Length: 552
Image (cartoon, rainbow, N blue to C red; front, side):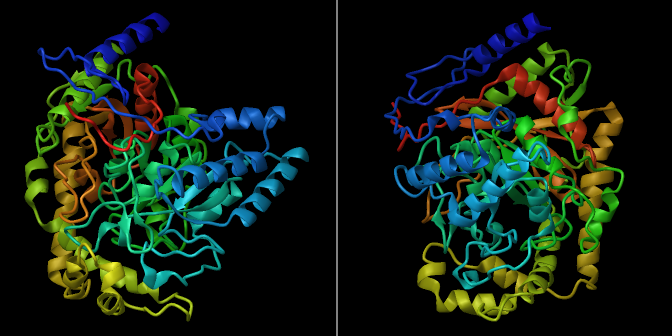
């Protein structure tokens, strides 16, 4: 197996033309086509470089050996954030830090370790959370200045579980304001409070959204891992575009209580990290039923507090992998297609049985049907109003209507580049008893489940489906908004099913990921397959904060 893995990786790198920023040009072996790399000047600030690409397991080994403490590790990450996020290339991925409280928490965990109590693989590991997730003592703002005084007194259950597992909750990441559910013309990674997050590979490129800061921060080695949220694509797209692993869990695997919502039908919370193993370790510290989130009660018997047990470098051997081609998942980017085809070839070399095509029968309908957006519009206002009702008295908004008025009054800060037309549409929707909502939810689930992912997996007896995650990153454009060409996240988003995206290659020095998708509660299988692919390919290289691409 070792020899085959080496040959497979060599073949993969040749075929997909993995390029690092600064290379002059690289050839690919797909029909004589070439993937191109741009020459560029790099910006590199050597701050605690020992942390660069350090895994959670390696951090644990160092702490167990006594060569590093959690307090030292946390302090080193804080130094990198100050040098690279707040200064230097100014990545702008972190929106809130409390260094004093964080260092105190890390020191307490060091004392526990010294006394012989190690809580698990996250003990002493610094983690950032997206700023729509409640953490006690920190503001939760969704990126809006309306919520700057929303200082929470309790952790959201996902935050509490991470804290209980020994994680150091370092602070909050910037995001697309209101999780990108405010305007059709937004720039992903921009918020009124945090402004624009950058892509760490090329600084004038977009990090995708809405968990943009949660992608940039671990990719830039500012933290061990981060937590993101997804309604449709908001974990997997920024993970792909910033060259990291993202796990979008089954809806109900992780609690949404204490998380600013969009849609109870589709919202889910998941880890974003540099490796599959790191993401799996974090996921195990997040899961479990929550009596205040009914969807999580279905996870009984389906969640695992240790997803590291599913890491299998040989998992692709004998696995049945279907390639989902129709529905707009291929063809929107030559660069993405080339890298994905090379990834599929690598899986075949690793012993996977590739069923190509294995199209989702309802894919074309999903791409054009309005039911998903109808569901989101109906669910947003009642879910958001329920969260806003818990605001402390210092916060001036309690309803979506209040937010709309606040944004108008503070348009110079909140709406200098794009407006709030999605807010306005949501405010016009009726109650959840409307037949239009009931019908839309039923159709959305039917298209994505029985007629969608379940249908194709039943037909071909598949372990997983695979498709491209997204394009290479587009330039940041605050005037026109995102240049979004295509993605494959919608079927799983509508179904509430899991996704795992993993780095697959580079074009012009910009990362491209592939997505493994599967049935409800199939995280163990997807993690296993993604890990096997990652170990065979090993394409990730750390970003070097290039200001822009010098294209020939």
